[in-house]
Image (cartoon, rainbow, N blue to C red; front, side, top):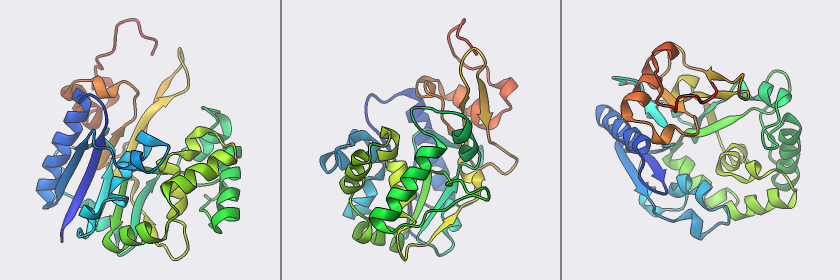
Length: 273
């Protein structure tokens, strides 16, 4: 099998970015895969108006990835846990695509409004998908639209080919959401993939959430906390803190592998929380 992880970054090469690439490359060597890191290469930005937010999806536009058995899109703030040897690419299980949910997000979107990302707008978005492309979206047990995170997304060879040939273009999707006057978040690549993997005759699987154990700030200062979804089965850690790209490698590795009380984050003294 010929498998590849694709990572992308635009801008100055920060310490956190270099660290993610370094450790993801070590991981691919352990499982017999490849890693491709594109730095400041513009592909999607030449074809759509949302620019930087679609560059991590460049393999959906580039022929050079067509010969791989699997292509994984992995965000630049994702780290494998120490010594990981389990093979990400086995998670697709014969489907076109594998992806993880953010199981707590539907509830958060009911009680928080962050830049218009709400359950109400999620429901509007799902109706637009149905009206425009006859897409039947996925809902959780409480009838809320599921939230998928493209920080770790695996395409099979057939799945990548079908996405390229059958999914609406990036720009068609972007303009549809702009015309609907949804918040800008709903025009981004994550919601594009989340929508189009529900396209007719496209088969996806929900991967074990340990492949995308995310963490982010929850709430606002001075009462913010860390929402840390790691478990004993965590494999990839998605460090979604806004300033983490600038942190040194040792701090990021502590976040990925240690309990919170051992993080000792390099943030300025006096910052709330």
